[in-house]
Amino acid sequence: MMIPPKISASIPVIGIAAFSGTGKTTLIEKLLLLLAGQGLRTGVVKATHHRIEPDPPGKDSYRLRHAGASQLVLSMPGRSLCYTEYPNGYERQLQEQLQLLNQDQLDLILVEGFREAPIAKIELHRSDYDKPFLFTEDPHIIAIAWDGNPGINLPGHLAELDINSPEHIASFIENYCHEK
Image (tube, rainbow, N blue to C red; front, side):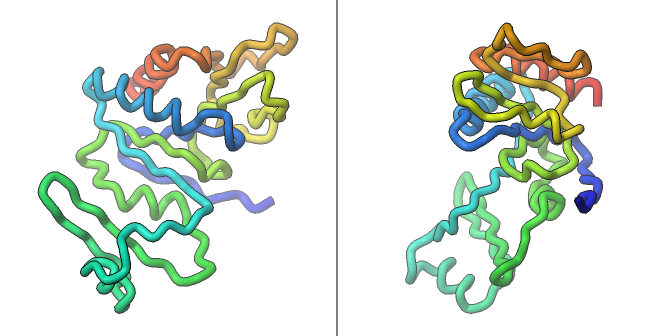
């Protein structure tokens, strides 16, 4: 197995790792509200395996991207979008996705996807979902947010969080950020 390169960021980066359908996006949505309420400015990098066309054919930004712009910033009142076009078959890397964010304006970055990346991660696990734990293969997992199956003992080095308590997970993330 090839060892991925170390990830470099000027602020804490925490991944939310789980199998599809475990509730990653729903939890991140709740965490963002809670973390913002504590004054933390949080960026998110979300990987998807689907190709999504962000704007309709014929619009200026669509035309400029398809004319060959490698990067395009679409600036509008209250929002900017940065499009980066990659060649077909290009394997995007977490490091370059992190560099697209203005880390000077953030306190924390949450990552959904990029499960193989060498970053600190919180694993989400549901006992009734019948999927294996990820921490047994991933040394970067620092905590397990789960529903606490009493028949399973987790390793002592992992923080144990309640998957049904976003407040508990947000508190863990806040403490992690203050330690970094």
